[in-house]
Length: 349
Ligand SMILES: Nc1ncnc2c1ncn2[C@@H]1O[C@H](COP(=O)(O)OP(=O)(O)O)[C@@H](O)[C@H]1O
Ligand SMILES: [Mg+2]
Image (tube, rainbow, N blue to C red; front, side, top):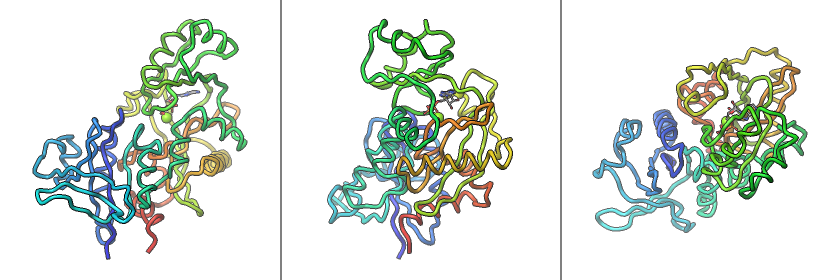
């Protein structure tokens, strides 16, 4: 019997457009001899639909206008349903779901909320569960736990409230510029400002507070950013380490998706010992944050060859051109190997 996989795409998140791209690649490569993929789209406003139209409409973001192929839908928390409810012309219809695959990035998708809904419903979820998702999304708490696990993190100041200007300057007076001012829980560089001088703090903090009610102010780490793809639960497969080469001020949203000034080197231009050290740190971080399924672990490599943690992406960009599958291609896994192995972790035969 084929297994039903609900593939969630879109999402109530600023990273909605990236999810559409990732989901198209995932839907194209799910092994149809083993699985029936059931696409479920979530609009930017948070409306849910089972979508039965063409993939091209997801890629072109017209899927939500194709009334003929949309049915209002929801993931039922009721364990006896174990799946999706749908409103059809004939009334309510239920479909058994064997696993939920959230191909959603950022808020309301990568942060534990959807994972919680699936766990409550008793349906296996592909990728990280509630705790790992929520922790990895929270840049401050992820840093605290990873630091306890023995991996260096940037020096930083955290605010759980809007500080007055004097409070802001006093708390940050010992930090060394340049600084990164970040909303605590965002992605794709939204709301992040890199500042060269302390006097730019209030404006940068204001910008970060537009995206979240809590912020983190970090010292710049010299060197460059490296990533490591991790796949698995008990036994882990590690990708080759990649490297982000920047000739710009930082890896912002524009750069991430146009890469005019950023270049990804896969594999990274580092020696084998250093690569092994980066991979070992990635495993430590993956375990410390209770990750399962998959994650891309982002770190910095300093000029002294020290590894400093940056963040974990629990649902990394996963188009066939994304960093995550490319790192695993480096150890011989094709894009569809990666996706079907990942699903297989939750649905062993
Ligand atoms: N402490 C830091 N030192 C150096 N560069 C940083 C630091 N923090 C962030 N950056 C740069 O900013 C980019 C975005 O920051 P990140 O925390 O990864 O946010 P996001 O979750 O939006 O990807 C990183 O890819 C990196 O280029
Ligand atoms: Mg990042």
